[in-house]
Image 1 (tube, rainbow, N blue to C red):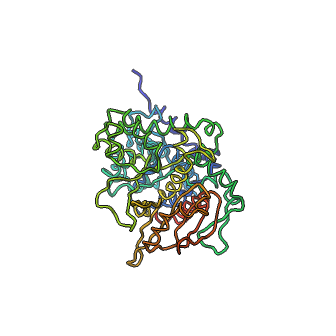
Image 2 (spheres, one colour; image 1 turned 45 degrees about the horizontal axis):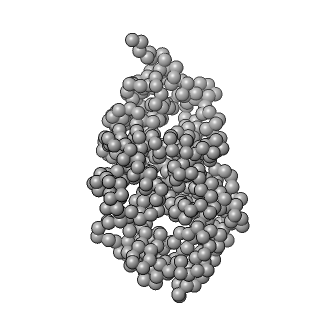
Image 3 (cartoon, rainbow, N blue to C red; image 1 turned 45 degrees about the vertical axis):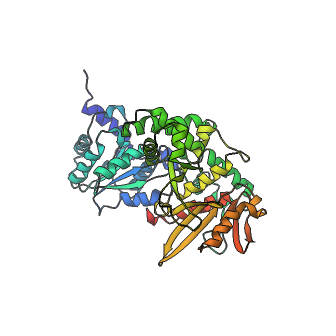
Length: 476
């Protein structure tokens, strides 16, 4: 049987690394692609040679990991790094099947006579396609201390599990989530047109065309979480085929079963579909078990798997006095990207019945970009009311509380009964700022039962959260 030769591998490597040629570089298609807000901290991490660690870039499928790698390579070339010092290879390339990482390094060294002390940048794309990749990568990090190793992969759950188990002290994880609403507006070049900073230079923003902003907000809900979909009318017109089959199904039908040994794939798929349809709703293991016929212990594992794959995120409940419950009986589940809902169940419009839940999901999705904050965010529910977002923060030994009620309607601004729970919560707790209610178009302040409530359109608040969180990237 004929075997792949070194010459064939060299030829493929040369094809994938056009910067090896004189005057060669990264394909202009990638260079022209907008850069994620995450690019600068990632680039800084890649060029940080003081720490001998591989960088693991992971996240949901189709959020732009490979494009960010190409942007990184282009920046290295612009900074004067010789093209022959950069190796890129995608491990899902058929000709690379069965070849170890060490063999690739040896071929690269041989081609350019690189020494062990050379300053090389080596990118392994889709590394999860290599069995026991974490063992091989750890060995390379230990053996070639002058080389910078960067690995990416779409099977985020598998990557994080293996990275944590085998990469302690050798791997640095870098999470790339789906697009924020702010990034989406920048990608379509409408951010400057539609949003303006407040005159007092606070972290607030305003718009002079709320209808246009809301239209883009709905587009963001339908397809804006995935960079490629933002620029492709074909994908926007058939998001079910693109997002569901290429992103959701591959995770549910391939990544998770292979990682965790799940035998009943359809059972997992039914659970995810149920949770996705009810994004933002309070659920409990007891009720889910009764309605699905799946044992509670199995449900608990499935939810943990879906969360590890970055498809959903659980939010814990507190009471009306901002106190935690001793037992986690109920919780809310949100899609990490609202665009998945449209792919599964169809696109939404201004008056669609799911707009309230998806608006809430989109705003929570912005907060999910801040891993340091998200553990401090909850929802409150007690017998006489609830609040959608409650942030519990500590500063100087004092507890600061943030309270936000999310609506896709202007009625709360004139019908105080619709925000009775929020007002009651504000009266019972010391808030760091006045409570906020998001609306469809209304802005301004109103005093309700002695509490000053701020109203702001949901689209502006969604933009503000994502913009401000990604504006301070020191937390990465």
